Length: 271
Length: 226
Ligand SMILES: Nc1ncnc2c1ncn2[C@@H]1O[C@H](COP(=O)(O)OP(=O)(O)OP(=O)(O)O)[C@@H](O)[C@H]1O
Ligand SMILES: [Mg+2]
Image (tube, rainbow over all chains, first blue to last red; front, side, top):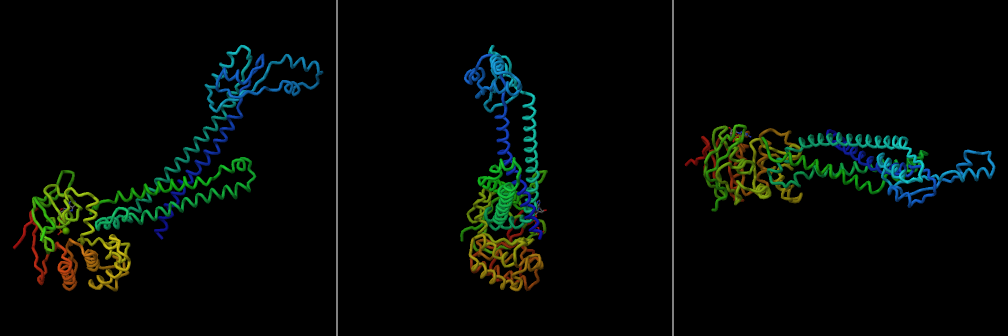
């Protein structure tokens, strides 16, 4: 009974660390694509007197990788309805050229400011709109959420690790006499700690299986049935087979470290 | 016969905050293979401490100590581990493994040496008969009396026919009859397997049939009586 309780404590602590690891991976994958989306969705609006090509924008600032001319006729049609064909043509002829510029991945407020000044060096460019405030607020909020989640996962892992160490203290106490007596009769370290390693490795595999099952269930059953857009869109990112390897490796590293800790701290006999 | 144990100017001490507390000082002796040695001395004189140095639990702070060819002042952990498989130790406080049955405790040295289950069982049964505890084979140490645990400790020490037997008060808790069982077993280990035997005791048995030597520990010195 006491034994089972000890096991459960150890497995639960391991599970919470592994859950943290898996969450971290899933979160990283999903937010990466969200971050990508934020970057792709971002654009700078440029008003120019004469037509400009992507190459020309790119020479002004190398972060600009794509430019899209905004259809002037569409703008006019969108805002002014009752207008004759001639008047419309005339109006369009008088309009400047509008471009929407896309950047390579790097985004930072100062970089965007620099891009703006670079663009304005071109005398034909009349106006540059970076939508700085709106964009930054969104990005900062996103980064804050990401940061807080990471701190939370880290905190969870640290607490669980202390629980594991605590559990190891109990094991150490329970196995100390046996290991010391075996040492006095010439048992090797591997032999003395064999039982502990066996228990710990079994627990590691069990925890890995439990965590994998939870995430696999989430992916293949829950996510499939849910009609939540963001879930179905990122369905593929929820759990990957390669995660099992990462989880198993983390679990093994954890238990092997803790068992060695127990074994080394019981070495030598104090009476 | 070659020397099994050689001590020269041996000094043993416990370290504390103030420095060293010497227990044995400048002792020299030699014990040949197959000898039977009794060690006596007042309580606290350092008998258990001397045994500790013989099984490598304590290193000499001065002098030299050689056991079965191993230099104990400078022994690697691998060599010490191997040396210990050749020893049979009986502790003053028994030191049985409480989570193991009596039968399993007895064959600990065989388990460590990797003998198969059949040999383990046969040896356990044989020794349990000798120490008259066959009925208790499946019990655990804490379910035994002190004297019974002591006999189990002896059976464990001799179960793999060790080269050297180190016994700390092996009859300390036993009546005359049980004590005689212990002495018989130790005598036969010495006669049959040529084990070198060192026994710490407060009373040398009156009817002891083997030739033996007697060391006394007193005032930090080790002296042989004649
Ligand atoms: N672990 C230890 N740390 C410090 N001092 C110790 C330790 N063990 C024993 N001593 C001291 O060393 C001295 C010798 O102790 P030891 O146990 O060798 O005596 P002993 O001859 O076996 O006594 P007894 O007949 O009572 O078993 C004693 O003064 C004791 O207090
Ligand atoms: Mg003693």
